[in-house]
Length: 133
Image (cartoon, rainbow, N blue to C red; front, side, top):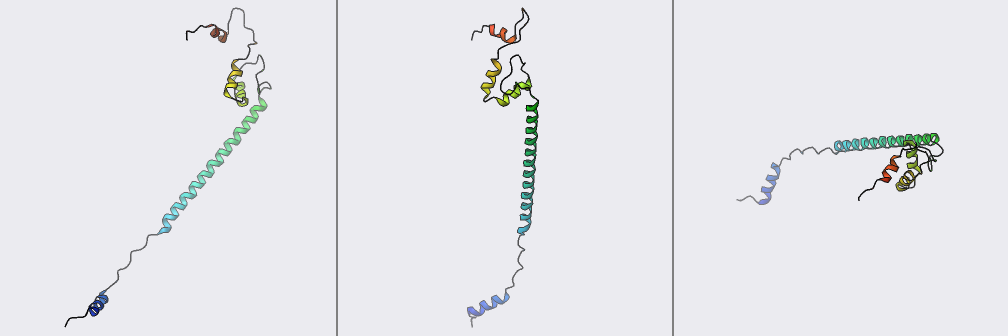
């Protein structure tokens, strides 16, 4: 006599032995590493911002000291007869509205220092040169 399907299925189920499950991956470990990275990146950004702020503060203090020690003729225009130095050129550069205005102010100053007889300035000598352009 054949065994009904229900009995065969019941016998099969009695033989079933479940396997032990594999452990789940730990989400916390990767999250901790990412959290530490974000923390270190934030700390590095904060240090960079503080360093930039300190550098800006030092730069502005140096500018204030330079403004106090510069000659009174330097801020807007050089006084007649005053030589053009790096300090006065830098002061003019800081105050000029544009680069072109700065160059025009420095280039087209009248020469007030008289030269000895028989000598020419470099600008005057170059002005006499005839170019074939």
